[in-house]
Length: 159
Image 1 (cartoon, rainbow, N blue to C red):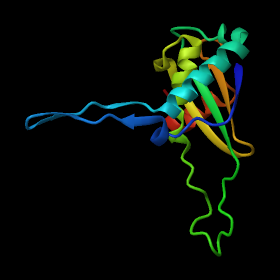
Image 2 (spheres, rainbow, N blue to C red):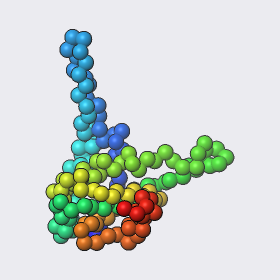
Image 3 (cartoon, rainbow, N blue to C red):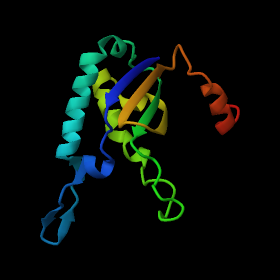
Image 4 (cartoon, one colour):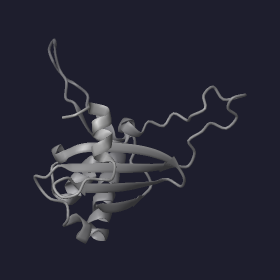
């Protein structure tokens, strides 16, 4: 297992990507898709640089063409709304961790020189604490994270 500690959080997909305006040719409208926003490009550049500079030995352990398990722990300053249940409508702040994982996966992919199609399991967790992100990676050819087989059997039944 390797561990990568990152300062801060990836931007949400809402902020990391922007929709490109469609091309209009007469009556035909051609959608153009999305690209990284300036915020997304900055995060990606800085995160890849941080990982490559600070984790070269760990990166050498990530194998190409081997299934990977990524466990990502996101820390947020506050998870709960102050004033709940009296003045706040809901207990939890609207923090969607799945909205932050795509750009992070791309950063790990580029830093490791692997393809993120190798990610067989991706588990996300949110915790309260100073904004930070911790990524744990296991190569599934040699080591299985503790409890992963049991979790898989519980969720999927016998394979």
